View 1 (tube, one colour):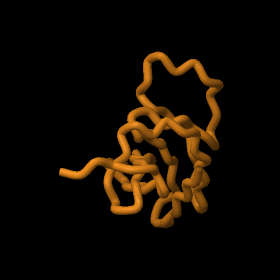
View 2 (view 1 turned 30 degrees about the vertical axis):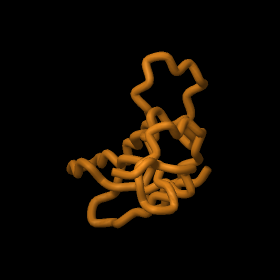
View 3 (view 1 turned 60 degrees about the vertical axis):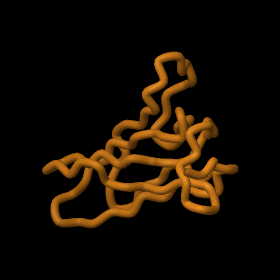
View 4 (view 1 turned 90 degrees about the vertical axis):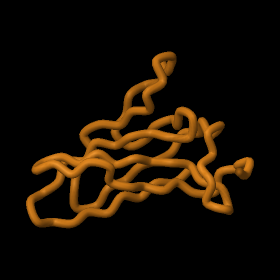
Length: 96
């Protein structure tokens, strides 16, 4: 078991593939690839060849303004809902 250090990157992984929509998990990682559960930074999210239709973090106390291009991490994680085009691959870009 390792203690996570400062987040240096955000990984994105499709956790659900639907016919029209995918759910993409966004997770803060440190230099060693460990999940950083204390990360609560705001991250910018951009998708090419698709459209973000929702962003969330699961924090019931989060009262920040809702946007489709940025989200505050909660316990190092957030989720993007992506509307995709049939048979077109897309790319998710996330940065601090």
